Length: 218
Length: 207
Image (cartoon, rainbow over all chains, first blue to last red):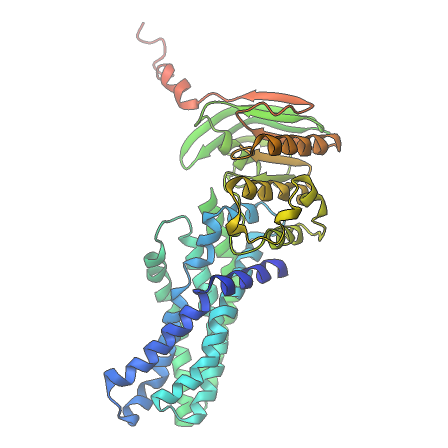
């Protein structure tokens, strides 16, 4: 499993595209918002939690179709499926490597970009917290979507349609954490809900992903 | 101990491709699958490797006893040959790639990124993976595609060594490999056979 994780990280870094793309998209979105909404810092601070979370979520979505598609096309997925590693482990490792190459960089970059949206400093802390807690769910759910569409040519659109509804609870609670943090209220409740979604997704979805992969490889 | 398959029916999607396949494979023997294009060689190998569940019939061994190699090489273009081999070795729980490197004379290519390999060289990397798996049955789907004469001989020697060590192999191929112990399984296209006869329920009713 460590070997697969190391290989996937190495591939993402060497092939570029992966986290560079997600970060660049996030940066572009966040820099464009003040131009669209206007430079009024009260307005910006009001919408900052939502914009930052939506940006992170869409950036995550960008690289989902690469999770299994490249391995499927060059035959590696067949070989992984016949290897001693169970497909559940393959799906978990793929989700982990997606999170390490998109979720983590996004969580680190988000508080810096929050400054562009005149987000108060105390909110930046909760933003990082909520992203670190919430983005694993995005990766795991996204991996499930990628597994469902692995055999399809140009499955990217279908992944978005399948996955976006599943992302909504994470988005609601994630943005709520930041909003409450910015207003000085206790963000404990949405933070716990966010953690619960992530824990549930990590516990259950690798099995669903593995089942979807088995069907796709038939 | 022998590896047996009884009355196996395999489907590709919802189309039955093979019916009533039975064979028994002794350790030390290679089973060569022959048949025209579309007769189900790949489907049979994928079924034996556990990628497609059998529609009917029994496979008397575990998919974990099979090392599968398909049409595609499964070699990552962005990694070097060595990194590719080390990865597969780790997946199969070893760290020793020396045997694989020797078998196909890959030493001069080790540090080369796989995207700069020729088709035949990539094939050699892919086949050398078999020696890393340490599994008793090799299932190979047209392994000699894009190999030159010298490397086809290297490949045949590798299979022979595997057979001598008590392993077995199931190979779909169209050429004569010169293996030591060979059984042949002829596959006929099922569709042609079905089209040939009349509907079994009407057979004889109209004459």
